[in-house]
Length: 355
Ligand code: COI
Image 1 (tube, rainbow, N blue to C red):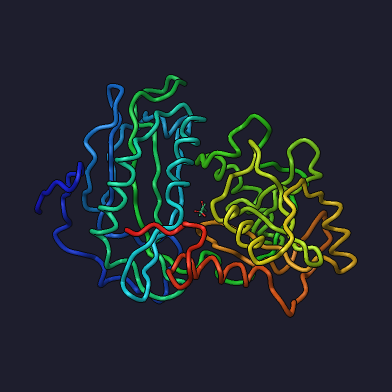
Image 2 (cartoon, rainbow, N blue to C red; image 1 turned 135 degrees about the vertical axis):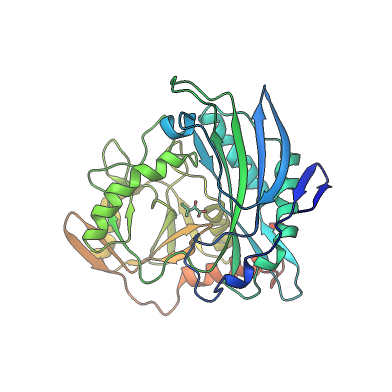
């Protein structure tokens, strides 16, 4: 194994690549990882020793805080290869900002910007061959931070690992997506961690989502925890409703993730001349719109899922199917965003970042 230092990063290369073992045409989201990973440790009050090593299991003390108190946050990003073999990221500054915002809520130390970008770009250059060409192919990038200090005292860890792992990806959802509107369980409460990409926010959704799956849904649209009267987000995605020719989405709050794709959808839709309303969206109005036929589309937005069209929805035992539209806002917006991501269109918003 060779060791090099690139910028501030120590690099230990994998002796052999696993890339030839991967069936890139039949990827299950997030199940295959590239040859290398980035790690940086926090100890004695500072982040130190940023390095890239072959992808491998970690050894942690069984009493590490992450296992007991869920001190873990993460991000989701993607790298895209264009037709000229250039590799791009999409708004990575937003992910850098958000992982620290999430970390702050979980009493974690801020991760330095320089290490984030040097670690990320060095890793992507090393695992460059894993970023496949073609509209829809990407490399899903998962930065995360975990509290690694040993000891079950319920207090913030004094030691952390910041890591980045990467998985070649195609689509997140295989098949149609139908959503159930939550009327009992909640994802987040005011003053809680809903806006953070905290690991526990996702764990708490698994059980109610499993119940919804038994009823034939793939996702739950979460409602506000107090009244269950307002639609907030769809678990792994922010959510948009098209009523007639207007797009409506809930404002972000301390209960809702400030999605990078969400804010891009809003800007692109406005730029396309679509009317967008960012305001509380009531369950009542969406059910009424489903009943009278003015509910034309529901779609989710997220890094992993990009834009996912919803085929149907359910609420308290009633079910509705969404119509086939001559013009699909979700598909047009998705196309525009992907054209920017894959360097197929002018980037008038300044969102692309060349690796
Ligand atoms: C992402 O879109 O990156 C997400 O965070 C969803 C993830 C839970 C798969």
